[in-house]
Image (cartoon, rainbow, N blue to C red; front, side):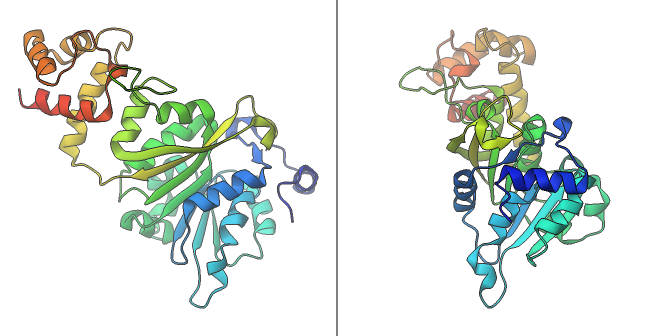
Length: 305
């Protein structure tokens, strides 16, 4: 069953009396090239556990499950497909029926840690606690950033080993942003709070772009495939101190950083001037001009004063 074929998709929808729900962000991928890019980036091994959020018809799920390791002696990768829409569950049971290495779970990924799915101590709960899993998904645009932040700093257990996600192009560019041109730095998007937040936890890069025409129904924006590789999670005290400073710095992005920090942190301006001088930062610099490394250094100096 070719789930990248519009006719096949529409026939399935008619058969089950279902239609794409805008509020769930249901735009189904038609591009075999994009699917291949995501699977290749995931580098799935035979003992991997892969979590997919919002499988829809199971188009990407099938490609993940087709991994040749599954047919080797000793088993293969385990695919856990988490779908919120109960109507799509019936379709998934048909489209994924031939794949024995797939487990379909009806749950809202945003509430996974407080749901019965997790509390029962089943496979999902176990892999989250051990942190030995990958996430590969075409995420709904409206909850993508929330899910990324949640998976990078989960309330229970550790982050995944790797995330390969299809998200809105503009959001992907914001996440992968670099400091605005200064002393050799540059980037297609200025540094922002989202970029600093994600890059603090992980290494990120855009793998490729996917036009709106590659989906049905066609969304209003293009998409991008992004790879996120989590780093070792810093201690809670370190995380709290870092984000207190960064959020203060971006509180008014168009204003000078030193003014934002003075106002929001109630930190003496004269001390900040000295810290900036020691770090070779201009007093006129804005939050968007700092690299992640400079943010880390700045936070340390503020904490030590």
